[in-house]
Image (cartoon, rainbow, N blue to C red):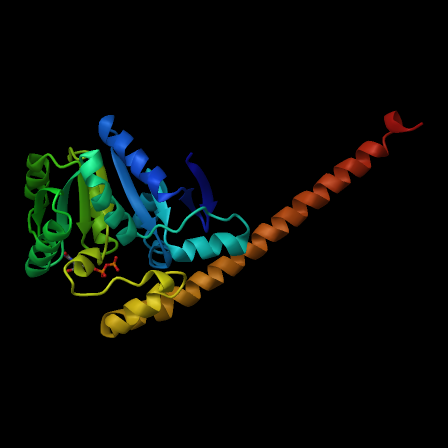
Length: 267
Ligand code: UDP
């Protein structure tokens, strides 16, 4: 199932949501530590200078593509099968939790936000097992790891923002006994009802506009820098990809020409 491609210098999995859920179930059963990353324009932008983040992205066991990467894959000519945003996967995991016996630990955001989120999730998904939760402004990382391990959760969702959440998972993955770990950014704010989730008809390329309108003060700078950088990278890779294919084709033509013009093929 899992077809992994390389896109804009990063590995990306061309998978459907149900394939990801199946992989998660298997990883839980076999206690295989799995870091899931939803790759997007913001992470690509931050990874250009933050080599630790770039390295973490490259080593993640599952890399799901947010819409920008799906668009990039089409432009470059290596189309990905499905767009799976971080918040979309979180929702799918909650939906699938009863059948699969998933239990969650939520780490991140402000105290009142996480309280509201936990209450909303308990109301909406009354079967869901919440093994534990904590706000994201803790002092002692080791103490946090002990609390997460004591909960015996099998899925840890971390909302500390990028790259803090990826650092937390990377630095503690050997100490953490939870098999599935994933950074989910501002998703807790959405589940708490602070921000609205992008309607599905706007998810195909306009999610950033919707997010910007809800939080312009914090996000205008991000989108002003990440979006042009992202488009530039896509065009650069498209050109390189096409010239590589052109180069390979002309090499093949040349090899064929040489083959047919050798004395052995004469007569
Ligand atoms: N946050 C946190 N601890 C910190 C810094 C941030 O819990 O030390 C939370 C913050 O309250 C917010 C989330 O991390 O809920 C960051 O959301 P953002 O939309 O910035 O995530 P990103 O877009 O970076 O994925």
